Image (cartoon, rainbow, N blue to C red; front, side):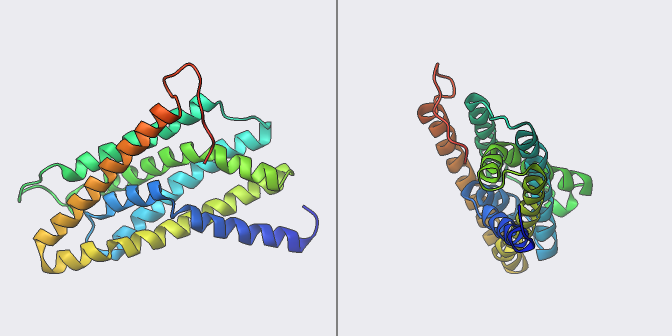
Length: 223
């Protein structure tokens, strides 16, 4: 990539696109379902950051491998990874819809290690599904391998920053409700779970019916 200005422009663009990437519908639905149980902005932002780290690490490693070796992800593999995201959304939805009695532990009672692993794993799943699209985008715009890898890294930093901000904002209703009405906080968690469940089912159906995941021929466009 010739010229310092071009490199700087690519870095700024990568960061901004990373911020935008954090707002993708499946990302927001998944993270909303998780933070609907949180009762502080700091914990919500921390969860978003962990999700972003898992996502960005996977995009950099898998997308970077696709860039370095100049290979394309097989369509059926890409569909399977996106199907994994749909299943994860469905499971997250069920988790929030599951009745929790008064004695059920809140998220702050769950061991911190589990709270840290969960968003990272979810971010990794999303990152696997999005790595092919990121690799295609960077290859089309930046043919030089070193600059392409640097772009993926900056893109990941933008995604982490974006998801941290988003989760902090998404936590507002839950924090507000937790301080005032426990029933309202449960309603928010239920609504987030229902949204995740329905969205996951819709995505899974599209992958099976339109994408042909289990058919002889597949129809997949990285996104």
